[in-house]
Length: 115
Length: 112
Image (cartoon, rainbow over all chains, first blue to last red; front, side):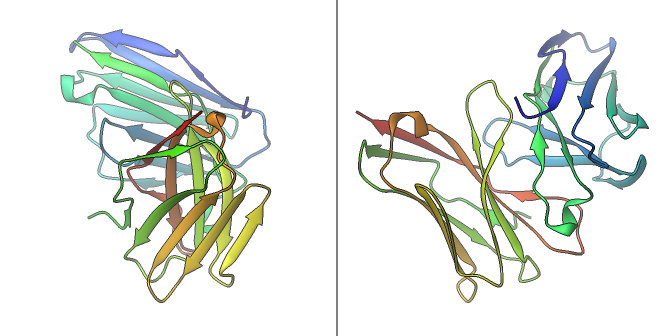
């Protein structure tokens, strides 16, 4: 248990569906992240929120839409995804942006399958 | 462009022996390096880190070595235990960047 909780753990969705991934942390951290883990690829950063402000969007397609209502919660809204978007989506948090050399704590991830 | 590289996708080691996992990086601005361990169906968990002002950091059975001139770091696990079997990710960042840059990971199997 790392203090970062992601729901759901597994999700199967059609290409026309709209779904949301949820991440919650109770570590008092101010930065939250979405990463994508595809098979045989490195972990890819998608979005960074620092003090609820989005500070990085790593050229992610608009079919992925993040939302950070407060420093404890982070959402990833999904719509009209493609089969190649099937991956493990990991949420992480850290005290502040990792540029201050603090390690990130990861959730267990959501295994997403787009059919 | 991958800035952190783990060139060995897998490694098999006998229990009790030393496991050595290697990582290379290309960005000379990186000044902080981390190793994460990941079990199947779980997120990565932080294992050990090293700042660029050091060349070695030890925590129990885990030691990370940093060779800045070669832009290379390694994780040593000794003695290796079956419970160490997992995927190990190397990560790096700089003070000016927000994100951790990860390697692809090395899958370690420790056999009894």
